[in-house]
Image (cartoon, rainbow over all chains, first blue to last red; front, side, top):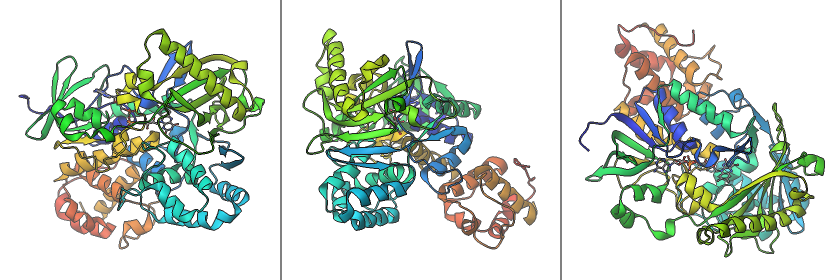
Length: 470
Length: 90
Ligand SMILES: Cc1cc2nc3c(=O)[nH]c(=O)nc-3n(C[C@H](O)[C@H](O)[C@H](O)COP(=O)(O)OP(=O)(O)OC[C@H]3O[C@@H](n4cnc5c(N)ncnc54)[C@H](O)[C@@H]3O)c2cc1C
């Protein structure tokens, strides 16, 4: 690269982490450029239009809900760092959510006492164990983990002796944020436990788009540059130092620092076959992906008797959170009803979303009509099981439905195998083998909407702002 | 800038980065962290704002000097000499 750096920082990807990092840097007058391959921003939590309706790609829940004025929690820290007001998000709280296993269910809400009382009801002999777990979690500083190799399953089992309760507590944590099969790293599990069970769920009025609009407008007002349809083809480096990027159209852009939200293996692939071969271990590649389906109904799910906001279910004798052998695993999953959030702007139609574990390899092998047929077939089997938990069959009231697969995720976000939660080992320090290239978002280790944004903020602080003070 | 002006400048920066904190009646001799919620990310922002508004550099090893408002006034006095107070939240 011959030209001197034009940018202080180039950010690969306009997802949650990239936008949040961009705002931080533009706030302090850095020359910053976000490059996004897609024509829309948002990444895994973008939005799209179909049949005159706007849908959120991902959003079930914004985690980490806390009441206005709460200090020192991830959501409040994030808002401060991005200089957003709590009211800007127009958050509506969940009604309640549930974990359902054969013969037993546990409800939880944004009031932790509900889960406490549910445990006392359903697992009276585990109350002390649960309280000891909560004390350990409260005392654990998961953002400065002393040991990142511990397993959440084994840590939970130290406090709780009933394996079914361990599975029931893990179920929502894994579905909402684990890149590992049947388990999650302990520090990640602590973050997820706090953000899902102790804090809770909310939804911004209007879904993800108003939040994304706010982030993009803030970034641009601060002078940040955002280029869409600008895929990075290559991360340019020399002597172990990252110098900038080359775009798909051949243009070269030099920067002091590059932050990548493309993923660990994906970023190494951009750095060249040699870097990929030398640094990416096959067992690190994420194995988990999902099929997500959305059903628009001619009435509200609550009027059909479904009052929960999110339901995590498992119908199998043994709970499995693994890559299934077939296209999907219908025995467990997540049901989401965005209508069941309180909202200043209620949704105009009823919506049910379903999430099921999927096997990206099986989906990859399907071509042409077989792919479409498989989508149809899989939806039928997912809905047959969902019916038992919803109390009605979505197709009886459906006015529109859509479904996307690991292939869709790979196509729109470039994630290898559509691995929604990224690599199975995280790089919590954001470091890569290249100087001046750092990871943000999913593969740094914080995921979900709130997590990815916090990741962008903290890596931008650490690698782009602090060094500029020297 | 005088000591009072420096303290006003710091409070104005805090009002920008932590608008939800009550800044009236802060004790200038007591660590800020004991009176309002400020974490290390917020301290970074104070330092970044000092640079942005006044062109002042505070090396990380010296963040400790900014623990109290009196400490800020003492430590920043030479760096802010001859500079004019800029208020964003007036
Ligand atoms: C179906 C589904 C449901 C979900 N539900 C929720 C939920 O309810 N709540 C929640 O908190 N989270 C949810 N998530 C997870 C959440 O969306 C993600 O964890 C988060 O958005 C990740 O953000 P990120 O910035 O790390 O990555 P991404 O969103 O993947 O952003 C990376 C961006 O980089 C771009 N990119 C990649 N390669 C290149 C390149 N070479 N050049 C230029 N640009 C590139 C991609 O196009 C993408 O826009 C869900 C995800 C899915 C798929």
